Length: 270
Length: 220
Image (cartoon, rainbow over all chains, first blue to last red; front, side):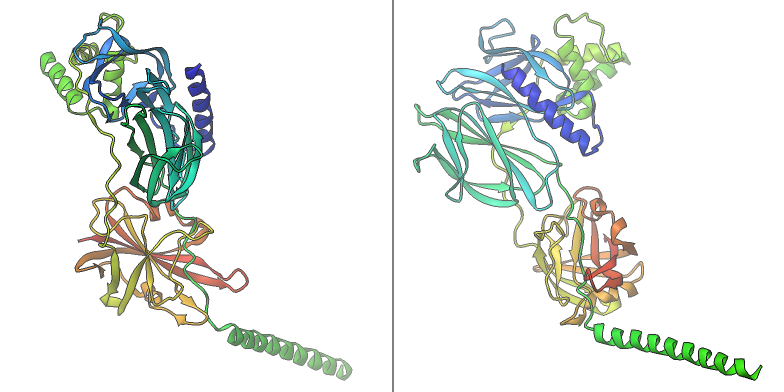
């Protein structure tokens, strides 16, 4: 189900990339980052039976990995449990579409059970002066609103869903409240949304254990230039121009008139 | 020889995963089901076995997923000087106008520094400073003198208490329809300074000039 949803989103984002005529960079590889957002557990991560990450601590994020597109069987175990150790989380047949930028998040579902969710990150171009912000609900918590400067920006977000939008680049004061209330669950935190980036904010942890927090991932390379540099307002010389044009026109008329008159005169004398 | 190659690949995989490592890493993952699997993608068998060896001792780095530090503040350009052209003018930070074009100080007496681009001293990207050539209510501003600047001239950009010196490499006149905006406003590549104003013919109906004058300088 989840994989299907991810695949559909990816197909869409790839289509939009193609429409923009962007270079097909690393056509066959996907960019994959992994975020550990399960409180309290240091883990090892296996991909297709091989250890990919060991001693992976909560609240940490890997650098982006370039992986060939395909299907991966992912398993998360307690640190040191070994390849055949008991799975804390297991997700088989996770689709990693070629060319996509993905973050796989190990997190709690709304009821507090660990799970893996692969998200496709939006890396389409951002207009000049803007930043993309994505929020993802990966916490054992009810629906939330995400606010910037006290005003709700993303409403009624539920685990494990995401919301995103384009905002003016700059620093905002963000917090997370229980949906439809002003009961602050996380924050406030100052968030610098850099121009031309996708800043992805993860709400994670557990409401019951009172350890809700934010994790942030920033993806760059979506910068756009302004549409132009309109660097001239013109001179206050329109009147002088008019006089000059009138002068030229007048001279032309005069010259034409003289020619006509002289021709007329010329005719009778012949 | 082969051992050295294997060790080298292993070491490079250890240091940090980069795009170039994708094949080796991918092979490691694909070969996971059976270590004896022949590597795909035309990967050298040596690389395959190195990757398999590497995969048995994973060292992929993870760092705290914390918000990035706020950008630098206070070190923005405050004054532009091109002594050879007798040009000296204040500089203020500017962004993007509602129509998507670069926002500029209304008066030709001031230039705007594009605050989403590079800062003087940044290791990469273009510092973009632009200003109006003229205004009907002002007349011609100092940036009209960009046309008189020759390659080799010195440009000084003051940022607060310090100054950065640049040397002019070229002054171009470019039709606005052909201006390479992505290069003008690039955020990567070697550090450079781009000073922009208008030139060419003024269309009094559209109230626009048809060219931009672009001075390109490199840091010294």
